[in-house]
Image 1 (spheres, rainbow, N blue to C red):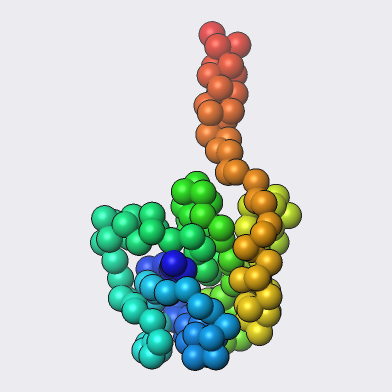
Image 2 (image 1 turned 90 degrees about the horizontal axis):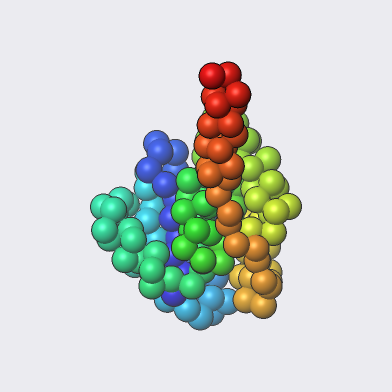
Length: 160
């Protein structure tokens, strides 16, 4: 299953939802799709959706999914990668009223450069991204929280 998650911010991402609908209509996507559409007002015709999911519903759908298609939000990307999902990230763009600026371009490039996700910078290439992700081996996410805590502890110990 493909899980599309667009976060909970006030910005729509109708462009991505429409593209997925078109791809299902043309049988470019053969898998079932479920979307958490957030603040988008586009109504999908070819897949199930809910605007918002509670934590348990979100976790259940994430668990069932093989592929996660998401916006360029750090939390959405890291959450899916930590669960071992193959992630396609599509940036929200200011020119379409999807965000206030284009910072998601940089975030997606960084995650892609670390070989954690598949970056889809052009929504018209989403079909290529879906094909690419099938056979590509991505790196596992490794948190640096432990390293940061150890560094702080070492600094504090030196100052005692």
